[in-house]
Length: 264
Ligand code: NAP
Ligand code: MN
Image (cartoon, rainbow, N blue to C red; front, side, top):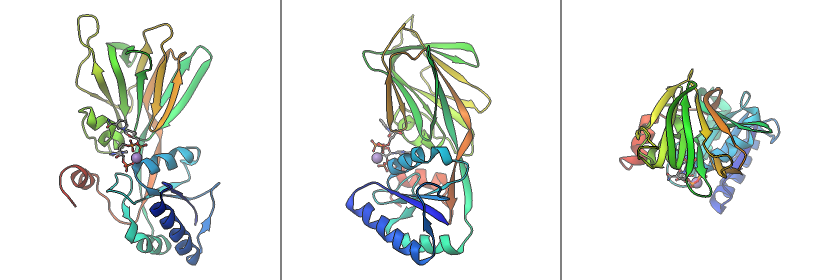
């Protein structure tokens, strides 16, 4: 088994990372940061987002495992004190592979296009003033948006930024994307639905800039890209998925309950 560990960088996470290397060596696992089979993220959900983007080019061959060193994580199912159990299970058991949908965003500029994959969401915001854009669903104009921004999230990202905006929590087995608004201005010219919408996999959504050149911030999970030449963005559910290796069940609704409703 070839593995790599990505940690949050704080003392506790670094210590656990060292401990993981020691336990892994005893089992004969090989550290390999270039061609890993398994990516272990030690920290929070933000650490797993970093690990995802670092190995996004290897999605077809790697699976992810999250260890949380802070509060309970949505992507991190193992606690710090369970590291020995995890390594033992990795050596002895066959994991179940669980795959979650991702969203793909293609930005179109006069000079070409760029493609991004998001695990949580992608957010479009105006940098100077409000964002003005039309939203098209399946090539038909849907609404004219003016406001702070638009968030397009994956099912597993629906519990993050999307939830703060009043979006629905979507089970990751439902291949879909959700479009939520950030502070839309509503009057006779700019009118939006207000509620978030959920599109199935075979639909697509275009966000078309309504100004000749507006400075936009495109935030892919935790990565911000600023540009003033974006004409439009196409959002779809990607054909690619992220794969998690599960050595024990980690039910989504239990995670939602434990994170938002009751102390586990
Ligand atoms: P951060 O500011 O540390 O993250 C904000 C919080 O979101 C953290 O508590 C993080 O958990 C949690 N989180 C991340 N993914 C989640 C998920 N899928 N479900 C539930 N909670 C989740 O920044 P970050 O760690 O780099 O994470 C980037 C994410 O922050 C973005 O993808 C976006 O979803 C979220 N965000 C939220 C808001 C908002 O709610 N108003 C605004 C901007 C960004 P950890 O502490 O375990 O990392
Ligand atoms: Mn974080």
